[in-house]
Picture 1 (cartoon, rainbow, N blue to C red):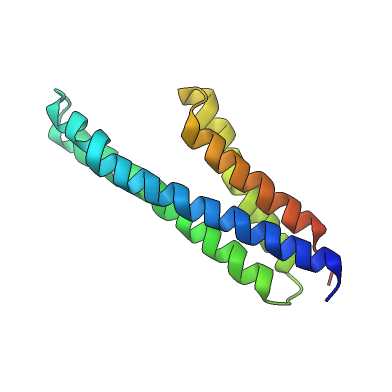
Picture 2 (spheres, one colour; picture 1 turned 180 degrees about the vertical axis):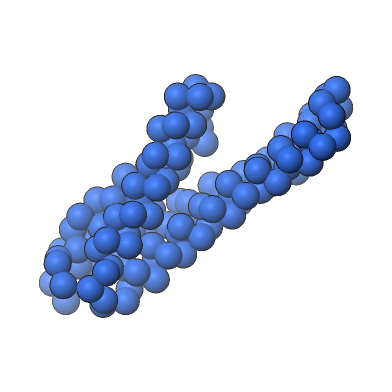
Length: 128
């Protein structure tokens, strides 16, 4: 294995680990801060439940994309580069849209960093 593929694996792995850490922060912050504040609001119960589902689904999305990027990075298949790039671009789009809608905050910065690491890793992989 050459230096490019090694560097690509390292970057994809670091980006995935950052996504996993952000998903864990998202889950714990939601349960400790967000959900109690949501329960104290005057929002309808159905909308509160929908917010919880969306909040937890976003964290699950990051875990899933990180796993796919990791598996693709360590399996020498023809689609490896494409899969890693799709995962990175998906997270980057999520970070940019989130920043545009909610403003820049630590969550967007973390997933944006993870996305950039995964994308750079994907670009470093040689074509099959």
